[in-house]
Image (cartoon, each protein chain N blue to C red):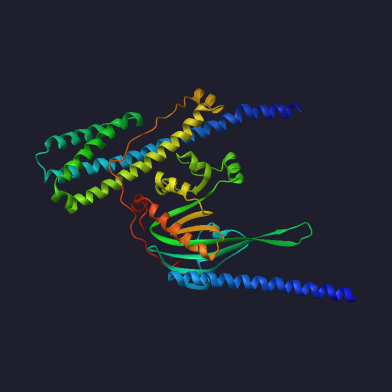
Length: 189
Length: 226
């Protein structure tokens, strides 16, 4: 009987914290990985901005201030890898800059109708959608991780081994994606 | 002896009547589905000539035996689709070794989309699935608690699940809850509802068409057809 109690106590003292520790490590790695996915999508956005600036410049060269502002905002956003809550304001600023650039384009019908600008707009819409998907995944994973870190008994293991809560990442899309393409019906085999 | 003969005769009559009623109900259903197909310009087939039951949906893998029948095909609200009856049965044995079958029947709508989607299954949460959550069999969890409470989403690709189920789609699914399950696999989208009267098949087609309209553009760009 005593042996059973000893085994049960060992399970509680060793196995349970071990399981919780492994779960914390797993969730922390998942959130880090999701943040890297956001980073990859943000990079797509950074890559699009120079093309967008050059295209608009071709039709509205005198809007220099807007071009310089968005170029600076892009450089600031790309400058270094920060924590999500520090990166978000910079991304929002870049988003506002790009939105202003698109507002400039609205005033030039030839630019709005050009194939190059339309293609860039489509790419931008797609990139914004991808960023939003990556952001939602990251935030969902952070939520699962933070909940575990803050609830009993995991909070004891988290404190002992230095697992801290992760910040959420919040940015709004600059533009929304287009509707679905047409549907086709192919055979089942 | 006379009583035994009478009993046998009654049994034969009852069995015959049951078989006749079953036959008549089936003929009525065939006629009902055929009428719907004619009214909306769909083609009709009693049998599963395209072997739809071989498609890789989880629903089609359930039970001991499965079957697809009464298939109608055509275009509804601008969307090509098929609708059909699907059944499967489970077998159970009692302590004496007697087997019994339990049939499960559905009406389904099927369409293709121009995307190569990972497998995803969306169904309703119930006592068993909630119990599964407690022992670590987690489904995909979204940021919308009402949606998580109502639906269970199984998908190995978290990115696809979040691409397909954006805020707008989740809200729409909460408002338009008249189905048993939705499955996506490759280019296929399958909507299953408990067996419907033929008169209600069109509602199912409309539901599938609306579901298709809710699919976010990012699904098509991230998962293009192979």
